[in-house]
Length: 132
Image (tube, rainbow, N blue to C red):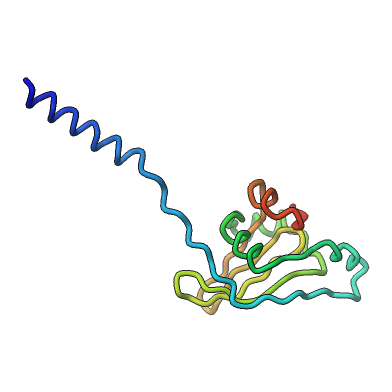
């Protein structure tokens, strides 16, 4: 009887460990370069004054923003005349990136073309981003 209780307890403990283990933590990208781009010929360029991002902000964006498909991106993204762009390393691979003031973003290389929208958690962490 003791062996049965011990075995049952061990099995329950094992299954609890499997069920309760944490999700893998997303790797924080390393921002290699960053530059600000403003289309000063646009009437909306005044909206760009408060839009500032640091390398740390960019890394946070790509951890918290929601990856979306092209259809959702086209419906939600409002492309403003100001953005930041540059390169970042993720999992040892170099990507180009862009983040537009409305919270839309891109991550791409010759094989990858991902679109992002900054929503709830992302907007809370990055108050300079306007959001959809």
